[in-house]
Image 1: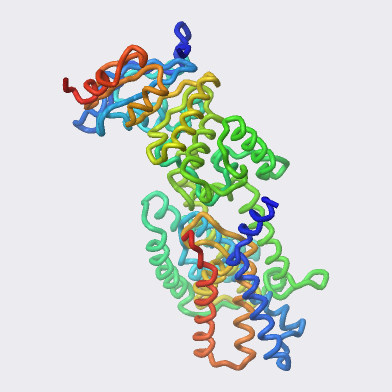
Image 2 (image 1 turned 90 degrees about the vertical axis):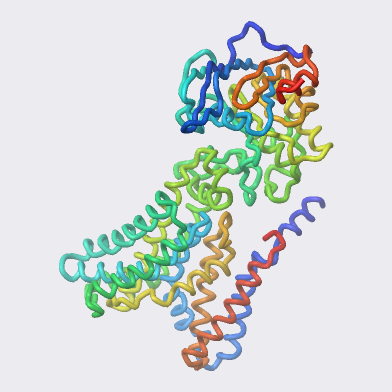
Length: 317
Length: 250
């Protein structure tokens, strides 16, 4: 009985905001858009496919936020990595292109991480600056030109292909979420990330190498953004400096709505997946409703605001 | 009353420790031996050098001069992890707990147990060891899986001491262990500290409460303005003497 009441107080409404919100918005669209094909398998699959890069960036951001830092630059990393991958792939080989793309994401993450961890600059300001810096680099790389990616093996693996009837982007999503969840929940690394974000001094005196941890989460975020860049390039069969440009708000909202704290020490990968799908569904539904781009932005902004307010409503914070 | 462990090799020996920051001498010529099963109190006014000494013994600072021995062997605490490996644990004044994590993750913070080929966190084992330890030390918490944030000040202090007890092989440093606690909670924590003696650990306690120092300690070491004024056996001194040693008056 005692345990039962304990369990009851433990079940916290706000932990489930993302799932409740997901369900409500799904039901709303299902009813309002029932004649517009919202519920068709094709459309629902599309939502998941379009959300894949968002989910992967969100996984990286869960680690960064949980460690008490933030990354605002991942949108620019998406563009740089996709362009680098496309150019190298077209001039050399697919493998080199993939490695160059992922490598550039890691390198930018390393750059962010070194400034944050070893020069002790706040990650908000560092990544705000590198967001602009690498958005500029992305424009310079190809003089604003888009680069087509015609390698069908690449576009198959990272975009439109499928295996056993299941689209490759679903494998990427499931694989990344499973791996991210395992590392975050089940390993020392994940535990140390949470400890660092909760109480950096406690982590430090407990022997956790906090500078290395700060560096590593920003590199992880850079890597995830680069992978998201490859997925965009694969699905759109080309790279362009605008890739990832509009994802900053979407990804941050997905992660926060999912139940990760902006203040560090608490996060969830599964919640981030649910948050990402919620954002994807919102995009999709609003377009199907025929809203203009400006109307969509306003409605989406309001819904995110409500969801974030609900998920943060906690007397302890 | 208490066995003072005379004749045994001290677990920690400090000989002529000196610490300078630029031109300022924070501690000079400090010498102290602590034996297993002994509780030594370090007292002195604010700025007397107690925090500096704690940081030297826990490996945060390296002394400018002097010798530090653990169980008779000279060593250099080049950082906090070396001190920990040699069996010295610190209970910090701010407790250094991770609020949003359960008790058992705090007990194993930085030293988590893992299992299996993928080195998964062994939550089950950590939970059961933690439960056993808090039961032994009689730290009354709802469960070892309770979140730190939901515990009272006394319970948190109990967890911090339990963590140090679990890992300390030789010495526990306690920095103002009851400064933030009420009367009943203080009594509870003092009882826990008494039980460390039975585990044959050496305890160095810093406290502003002379009543507490007299209740807990075997010996009292007084610091004033970085200088060691003297060491007294608790049973052979009284508060007046200690107060005048602390203040330099009378």
